[in-house]
Length: 277
Length: 170
Image 1: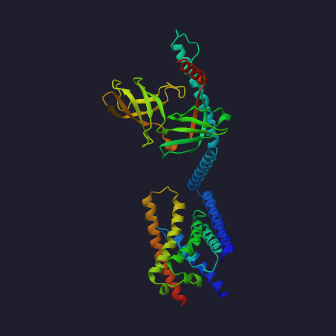
Image 2 (image 1 turned 180 degrees about the vertical axis):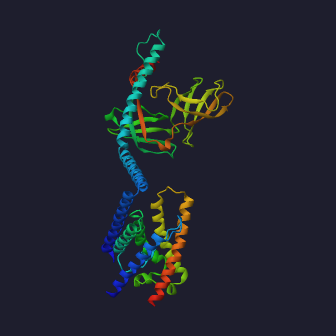
Image 3 (image 1 turned 45 degrees about the vertical axis):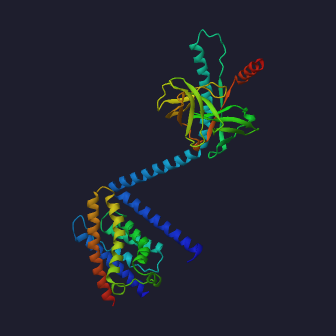
């Protein structure tokens, strides 16, 4: 009775039971219209449920492929969007003497390989490096805000200084009034940051949204960053605004590295200006 | 050999009683009188469950055909009871009895345990029977009433048959 014979015997018993019950159900279905209708209905329902489950499982296993395709599509769309934005800006300034628009951004998707959150100086490691065209100083963003800035690049990986770094700050503006200031993380709560040195007369209110200003060659303008959750006047001169960040750094997985195609030109100009002084 | 003939005779008598009950005794739509569960319960315990199920299936089929019901209904219920018989037995009586392959009498096991075992067996039988018969077409109240009344009526019949058989054997 022990080991395999018992197992085989149990399996045979179960098979006999299933076979006899199925035989009974077939006989019942053949002898009564009502029973046939209900039994066939039940079988069809079970079949549909099985197909649904199979389809769900197949769908689950194809998610990675679909996800990659979506990321690629998103990357292309972001690039197209930046082109359209640049074209729209050009059209709204017909008298502009500039025939070339600065700040056309291109995007490249990347996955986070490693990240820290609980420190004062956090960083991320992404799976794209110089082979993918990534360079130091490029921005890293998602649809929910700014993630950080590329600090070092190897062939296949890049080291990103996270926005959750007390030494990092980015230029951000109030979308309602266009007042801008420096947004920095205070080193405590990963869901909150402070927008500093905002004019007292900006008319900021709790719930107003904040976006990137575009006043740097790193991040494109108008990436939503968060909303005002607290307003603190500082020495009667200006306001510090506490911002609830849209970006949840605890669940970050995919990011976009954003490259300003005119960055070199801008930096060269800045360098010349410095040298002249 | 003598024992086998005894069992065949026992089966034949029960089937005869079943035919009489189905054909000539009308107790309304809520009660289904059936002594097939007794036949399945008293199949020898040393027999493999698979063999018991096949015997139960055959007896159920005979009842279905002779009693003019839906073919397969009693057979399905009897097969389910044959499958559940040993676990029910182990739950209601001690496992020693299962190893000895002896069905204890009311006097040995006690009235309460014996009734528990018969009731549990009837419950398995009638759950399958009533579910397949009504296939969700009847209301829950009707189904429950049918189940309770059938179990109660058959319990009385089976205990009566059981008692008379035990006395005649002794």
